[in-house]
Image 1: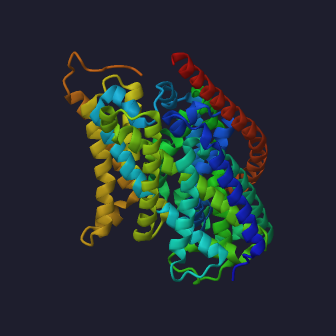
Image 2: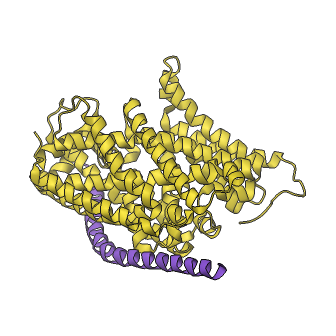
Image 3: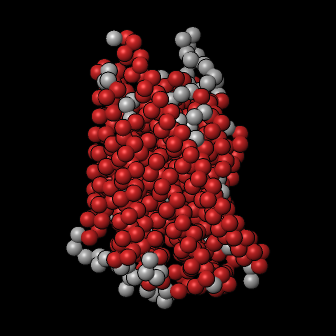
Length: 496
Length: 57
């Protein structure tokens, strides 16, 4: 039985009202497409830290990191350390993000056009959208499932559909009206609410369960594999290698992440945002991981079964007292709304800026009409996410699903970005080859998992080697394709 | 027993709670200043655009 009462409902209501009001109030500053998509490039360091942290922590994040803790112990938080290292390294060196910000673009494909031409811009936009839609498709559902479980709402009738629709409407209203400006302002408020909730709930859990008990639980269930990813049978070197590639690619090419760099005042600000937010990504895996381990320590064996992502919400619904339950729901709503709004805008910006680029060249919309197009695109995307989340039957590890679907875009986009910035010989043939190779491998793997005749082979290959193959294949295709294309006098061998 | 592993993750968890609490405090105050500055600059930009339009007409 959940402890969600009228007091908790009031806390959530106040949070929702404050966020919606702030998000809607700043819409009057949006007069140009650049303000709608990248906040007029006026974002400073501390707002950037709040926005990046809030964007990259949603309920889906909490669900899969807690599931990692429940299924793998502390070793499940290893990707968090890899993320932090990637952010520090890229923030310190400015690798790729410095030339990207200096290019003055609004999306990654726009940058590729400068080197590889219009077709590659369109193709890379399409890959980012396919990968992004598959990836984000489960976010609303994860959020709905979590809130229903924690608030103790009976999971019968249309409660999930109603919860998902309410969340979508709340997010879409201010995102459609204020674009990136509303997203940044609400991200800031959501970061504060989310962080207070995460810290307070974690301290309460540690006090209640006991740190020694958490360590002993991992020890008794998983032994050394619960602490060391290298001896964990589900992880090992292939997991470390694939996740290292994924996190570097995510930092460099994930549109919701790089939109923070592109919205920054200058490249130096973008680099500082990355460096100073880096340790948050350890917290992002460790804190919900502790919640998952607490569920493992407390819930009776056999209650959870195979759907281990349900363990943490079920545990929280029974352990948190009145008042704190409201803070948790407000914190998780904040986390999810900031993520959903940023992702809606990020993928909407790629559709407007890149996929519709040929149409925009012909129709030449005014700034006002451009903003209207963007608002319409965000609304359509919201409806798509609602129906995809209800339709897709997600089974197994959420983290594995997210990394595989993300790889469709990450492998090729990382190859294109690095080549675009640092390899003068790279050209459109190599870029096209990299896009095709990077998408075909993970899509084939996803298909093999669904077909009964190839299911065994897919299990033998595993998601890690499939992902590594996508990155390797994309890089090889870029090199071979670029070297095969004859260098014509008009070719753009430019260094950005 | 996995003494080293337990110590490592205990220190990481402690660092997370300390770092996160500190950052929330700083970002709350400095972020609010950033938002005010951003909105002021955008408002000034809008006023400049209106001035330019007046000059042209």
